[in-house]
Length: 400
Image (tube, rainbow, N blue to C red; front, side):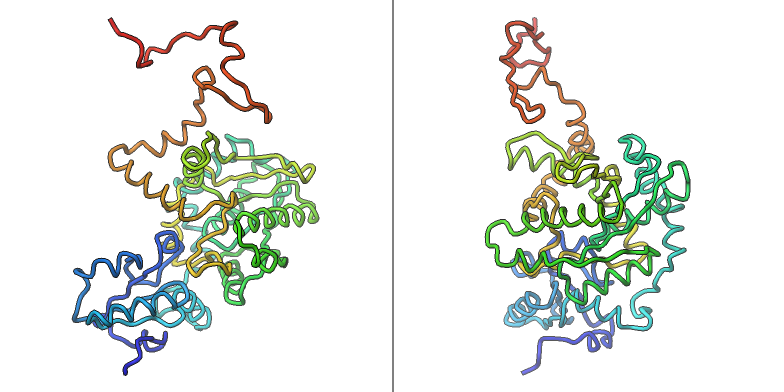
C-alpha cells in the first residue's frame, strides 16, 4: 500500500502542476505564515465540502506538526482522492529551511538592509509613522529611559524591535534599548528560529531561560492564563535586573479592539488594553505598548513582503495553539471576535475605528455604574443632587 506521508525532499521534487498544497491549520495559525504556493482550507471545512477539490492532482496537506494532516489525508484517500500529508508539517518546513545553505528553493532571503529599507520606504506610513504617533500621543518614552523590548519570537514583537531601532536613529528622545528574549522551555527548533530571525533582522537579543513550560504543564485549569502571568513576571524581573525601567510589548490595534469586545461579550465589562501601565508588583517599572495604532494586516504585509517566517506558540497543550495571550484568554474566542468584526465590516467599514474610539468617548453621565480606583460608583449617588439632562436620542422622548 502506497504511503500517504511525503517527506520534504519528495515534496520539493514534484512538478508544481502535479499537486495542490493545502494548509489545513486554523485561521490564527495561518496568520503566522504559510508555505509558499499553499492555499488555506481549515481542517473542519476541508472534509465537509470536497466539491471544489481536484481529482486529477495530488492533494498535499500540512498542519502544524503533521498529525492532523495525516488523519485528513487518510479520510480524503478513502473518498477517492490522491491525498498526502507533508511530514513534519509547517514546523518541519521551517526546520528544513533553516538547514538549507540557501532558501532559493522558495524565495530569496532578504538582507537586514533590505528589511530596514522596507520600513523606511514602503511601509513608512503604515508602520513607522503609527509607531511614532503612539509613542508621542501616549507619552511612552522620556529621556533617560531604558526599555526592555520583549521579543516572543512572533511577527509583532520582532517588528516592534525593528521600529524601536528606527526610532532611535531619529535621536528625538535619548533612550536605551535591550532586546530581551525569554526561553520558557522552547524546543530546539523554536529556539533556533528566534535566533535565526534575530540575526537576519539585525537585532542583538539577550536570551535568558526559565522553566515556565515545565511548571504549567501539569495544570489542567487555565494553564495559558498562569503561563502568561508567569512570563510577564519573569520579564519584569529580568528587565529590572538589567537596569531597565520599562518593558515594551507588541500588542497592536487589532488586539485592542478585540479586547474591548471580549470584555463586553465574555466579561460583562467595558475596558480596554491600555497603552501604558505602571507595575503594581515591580516598583519603578512601567509597561508600554508602542504598536498600539498599527494594524495587524499591515504587519502581515510587511512580513510576507520580506519573506519572513516567525514563531507561533510552542507550548505543549495543543498542536494548533497559536499564542499565549497576555490576558490568558482563549484563542478560539479571539478568532470568534475576529470573524465577528470582519462580518460587521462588510456593512460598516468604520466599525473597527468606532470600537477603538468607544473607550475614548465614554460618557459617565450615561452609565449606570463605573469603577474608579477599584471602587464602584452608581449613577444614584448624584441622581437627586445633580439632575442629568435627558439626551435627545433617548428612545423614550416623544419628538413633537
